[in-house]
Image 1 (cartoon, helix red, strand yellow):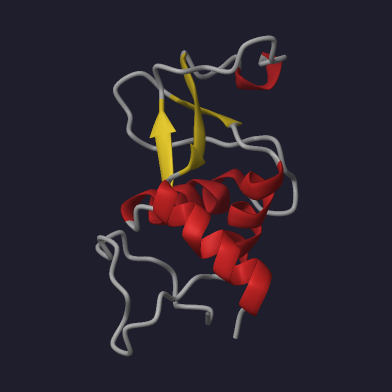
Image 2: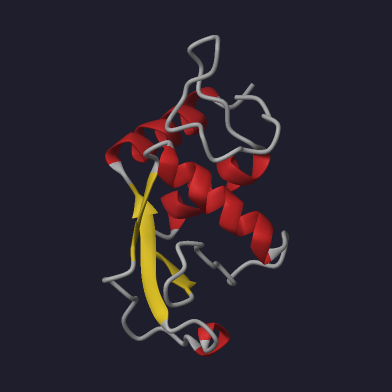
Length: 121
């Protein structure tokens, strides 16, 4: 799985010219994190569709937003703003009134299993 040039948002689950699913390093790390922690928090501003993830500091919030959007468009994660995490300290998300969570889809779980068994190339 190679590093593609920034997702343009038009991938719609594309598998590239070779039929292989291409993922960035950030996307792979997010999928592997979801294999360890099944549900992670997400938020957004009212009337905005841009997901915000503030739990990690390795990348900027804008990069994490792009990662989440691309993973969702490829059908690897599901972002659900009607299912916020319970007993979660959401003070970091105070500026974002719409709060929810995201998790792997069945397809995302299959990709994680392939990553764990075959690795990425």
